[in-house]
Length: 151
Image (cartoon, rainbow, N blue to C red; front, side, top):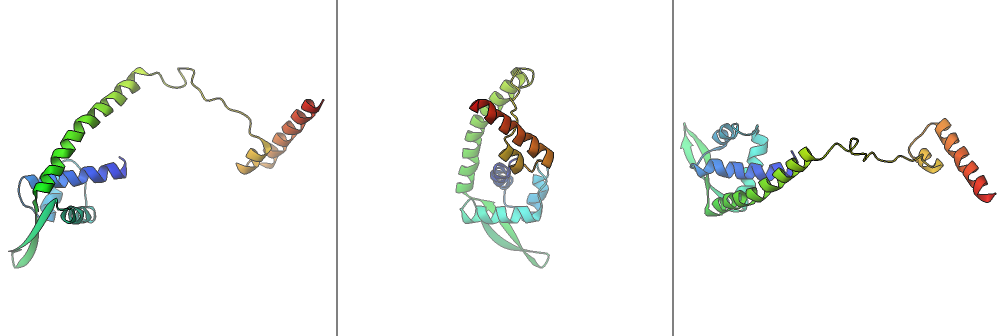
């Protein structure tokens, strides 16, 4: 999946987990495992971004003698979820269109849509790193074409 698209979706997935109530990193990862494999090194930058843009807020509570950081969904975070769900309907329609068109359309080779190939010019052959023989053949072809046009 495209990295940027996945990044945005992961943010909304984190917010969706927090919709159920406040949670902390380890539990958020466990919840997300239902839909995606995510590591701590991926989750914590997402949590930081979401906190910075006001989608969630944090607080600390002591647990077994240690302070644990909890994350809680804010109204801004809920709005982000709502907007995502509205956009999803439009995206779903586009994905469905692409899938339907892909099923109906013949493969390019079957539809006679094969790309035309031309012999490379001597310069193109050299630029492409062709062998000496390929370069010589291309040069000879250009020379004979030039002679024919001058005659």
